[in-house]
Length: 329
Image (cartoon, rainbow, N blue to C red; front, side, top):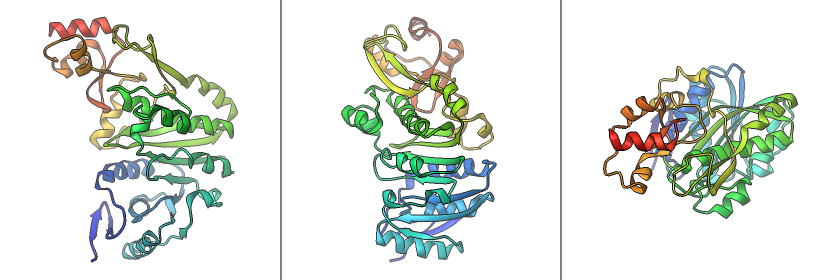
């Protein structure tokens, strides 16, 4: 039975193929970022499923010259063919495993959105690319790995150690970006994160890569480690727990500050430090009976809220200051 769904400017038949409605926000943000990229884009939509992401890119972004689609599942291939016809767009459709595809160099924007970890696909693209400038759009849904529940898998897949605590979604996203950076640096590509976020069991980053060895050398300082103390007493920078290497610089660009999506506005407003504190965790540990109004605490501490955690704050102030105001407000 045909089941047409409208999303953005696209109308697609999603019957019989994977469609995640919670990914709509991710697609909304990706479309807005793509619209603001100065380059004319030739896009490969890897792991296309219904094709909705690539179709929206084609319909909603004037700087997109073409979109081609890739999937290995025959049902998905049939559905993509139907959906691009429904939406009146052109595009090649490749029935092939992502890792067997040889023509990444025909594109300057590669979408990597597999089920689970994207880690094994990132080196495949970067190692086969010959362009001086291109873009990667990467989604990771293996958040249990990046958040430390399966820490051995994180070390194996991302060559990084996670921390399993209530701030793990930020460290996990920064581990993902750092992994892309490490692979890119090997092949003489510098990276510039354009937009990255965590939302409902997914971590997403859109990154610009360009060949520039001098810029890589300047960027090496942005690969580092986070240290945390188990009793939270000394804050970030000290302690017996370690996460990384991770990306400690900005994971977004201010050039996208005009995107009118609440999640993006929250990201742009975040204090530019590579960690945050979970107030609920601190209240539990120090037996503080009630958490004060977060916005009031943020104003006093000169920090910000964070999209990673509704109970989280970013601040450069020491833990002793946070605890003092939590107890007094």
